[in-house]
Image (cartoon, rainbow, N blue to C red):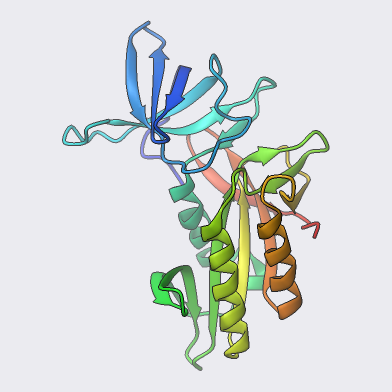
Length: 235
C-alpha cells in the first residue's frame, strides 16, 4: 500500500475520546487529528512520542489529518490505522504474495454473512464456486519477548467474528483469521489471554473447529506499508 504523499512527522501530546489526538507539528503549531483505531493502542500512544500524519487533503472533514503511524522509543514504526489492514492484505493476495491464499479469481470486500449480522473483510471466490472467508485483524501491541498480541482491549466483536468463521467451516467453506502485524520487530503472534481470556479461548476453539489462523508481518514506512513475512502463531 503506497501513500499518495509521504506522511508528516509530529509529536503526540495526548489521545482522547478514542478517535481524537492533539499533536505538535515541527513548526510548533498544535492541531487535533483523527485517530482511526478503536483499540487501546497499548504501547503505541505514549505522549511525547513521534507520530506520522496523513494529510487527507479534504477540507470538508472536521479533522483533515489522520494519525496513521506511531514510532516507538527505539525507532520502530507501527501502523495504527486499522482501516489499512484489509487493504494491505487484499493487495498482497492480489499480488500473489500469500501462497496459502492463492487460486481464487475474485476478492470481494465487506460482504454480509453469518448468523450474527456480520460483514466479512475479504471473501475469496473461484470459478468453481469455492469460497474462502478471511477476517483480518490489525495487530500493533508487542510484549517483552517480541510476541505481537491481540487484542489490546476486551473485544466482544472479535469473539463474534470467530464464531461466524466457525459457522462458515461448519457450512463447508474455508475460513481464515488473518493477523496483520503492522510492525517489523514482531517475531510471533499470540492471543492476549491476560487482556481478554474469552477471546483466547474462542480463538483456540476456532482453530480446533477448522478455522485457519495466519499471521504476516508488515514493513511500515512513511511512504508505504506492505506485507513482508509470515509469522508463527502461538495458541
